[in-house]
Image (tube, rainbow, N blue to C red):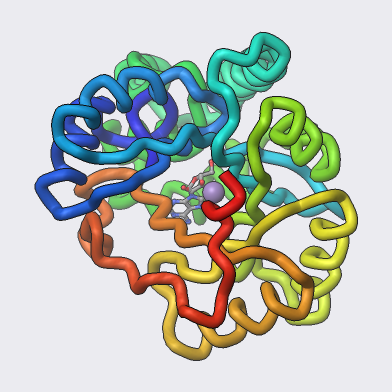
Length: 269
Ligand code: AMP
Ligand code: MN
């Protein structure tokens, strides 16, 4: 789940309170390239009887493709891990400024001010913040249009980013005492062949788990992911990728449980 320290909409206190009210008894805060809200989540969660797992969603690259790795169970106070994340956060901040410059050059008005408002609580600014800002300026009607017209690869506001290599971020997670999970594999627009290659590479690089249950998946997707996890000897995980109430199709605590046939990644924690 994302908080407003990255591109989630809710402050961590509200997020944990709403999760508890929805009946969730265990959650992972997985902000993009930051563990800064894990401690506060624990503080809020403890009296509510909710267990918090330290988490992060790391951007990485593999074979020219952007791939997200969810780290779970790291020591959020690990100094080396913290300094690595800080470097990525700075890279994100620089990228965000470049995106704004490109959008201004493309004729978008008032975008800098709106991006500043959208990112005021964030240490890891991202394209979703910029998309929200573009909606606020009236340049686009909705988030999807913002990505399609401006922020996706090939569009005027797209800034290529050199994320760390996939194997590198897996190592970061392990060195901080966590387990590495390949996030939402079916959302990268890869062929089935390439998905299998990615799962193989991920396992060979020491990856531990695969998100078998994700938001918006159907039974066929879930069966496919389950088979992929089993055939690659990866544990299973459940990832809502919750960003806040504007994702109207995604309610807290409504994801399917991990199938019984799948060993859970959290057993490793
Ligand atoms: P970034 O990590 O800054 O490149 O931003 C990527 C994030 O933007 C993803 O994690 C998604 O949450 C979000 N995103 C990407 N594409 C779309 C889209 N078409 N519509 C809505 N959100 C998107
Ligand atoms: Mn992601």
